[in-house]
Every structure is written in structure tokens, then in C-alpha cells.
Amino acid sequence: MKLISNFQFCDDKIIEKGAVAAGFADPTLEVITQATHGFNIMGDPFEVTRSDSNRVFEIEKQPAFKFLADRVGIPEAKDIWELAGMFFGRELPEALHDEYGNTHTLFNVFGKGDDGSLLFPQVLPLGTKLCLAVRDEERMFADLDKMVAQLIERCQGRKPYAVFHADCAARGRWSFNRVLKDEIVQRMQYPLIQDQNVPWLGLYGFGEFSQLGGRNRFHMFTTSLFVILKKEE
Image 1 (cartoon, rainbow, N blue to C red):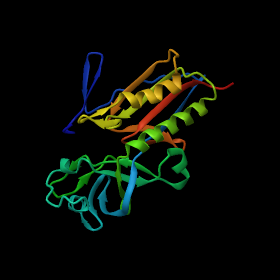
Image 2: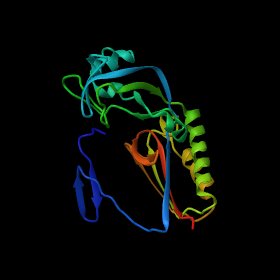
Image 3: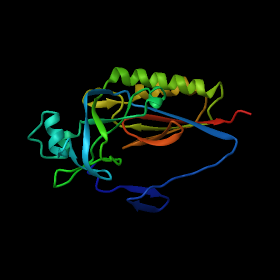
Image 4: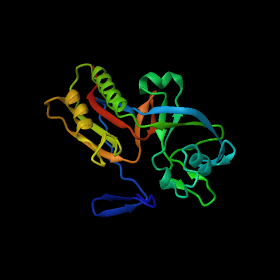
């Protein structure tokens, strides 16, 4: 979690700062995808006033790190991990609100420069409006149930061939100083596949990709599901 490098394994090779992908193609199959996070947006938005790609130098014309530390009441903060519990929302176009079940996508900060600049996992151009967001477990589970119901409706009675699942490790109920994951998995698996023998392949990630509005988008803190189905004839 120092975010210095990453390692991937493929057969007898170890790949640093790379990615391993497995692809398959079958014209008789289709995939339906959906993602949900269930966080609440809070407070007034603030604006990126100086940035370069995914590095933000100023927010509201103030040094980015100082602005956020003051915003959450930790003006003496020195290290990025002191702000690790901060979640940021970026508003989606209104046409995507219903499909996503939320008005904003989420992400957090993953790096700090010596000059007080901040690194984000996506490009934030000048003028980008951001909001703070807060974890809401009740909504997290309610929105998950809603998304699963929507996926079942989209299946139109077809049995899934397989389900791929990307989940943020921070999801689930926070209890006993750890996140409990079993319930959140069960609330997806049984409604979708019940007692059928369907492969379910999942992973915990530091970001998820799922379609929204017909195109792939980057998400964080979500449950993202990818259901493989036989195309309707």
C-alpha cells in the first residue's frame, strides 16, 4: 500500500509496473455490466484552479493539500495518509444519474508532492468541481440490492454463463476493526445465480472499470459486476 510499484504474475514471469489481461471472444455471448458505491455527497463543491493531467496544484487558488487539510479540520496534517479517509465525488451528467444510482463517481488521493500538490487516479482539468463524500453503509447495501435487481431484469430470464466481479476492499460492514465482506457477496450471488452451478470470479481492486452510459468508465469504492449471457436470438 505504499503505491510505489505493482507486481503481476503470469506463468513463470513476474511483471513489474504492468498488467496481465486474459481475453476471450464468442459472438453468441454478451456482457452486461453495472457498478454502485452508495456514498453520500456532502457540502458545497470546490474547484480545481491549477492542474496538470492528474496532478492538482491548487484548489480554490490555494495549495491543494493545505486546502483539503483545512477543509476537513486537520490544518496540521503533513502526510497524505492523514487524509486517507477522504472521499471525493465528481458529478456525472444528469442523464447518467438513474443508471448509476448516484449523482457522482468517487475516488481519493493517492500521492502528495513536496510542493503540496496532490496526485489523483484520473485527469482533473482546470475548472473541475469536486465534493466531499461520506460512507453510508445503509445506502451501500440498499443501492447494491437495487443494482442486482436491475441486472436480473436485464438478464430477461437468461441463466448467466459466468459472472465477473470487481470489488473495493473497503466495502462491506465495518465491525470489529475490520470490513466484513460475506454479507455483501451473498446479497449478490444468491439473487443472481441462486443454486445454479455458475462460475463466479472476483477480485479486490484499487479501482474498478464498468460501463456507464454505454462506455467504459473508471470507478472507485464500488461493487462492479459483469454478467456473461447468451445473446437473445
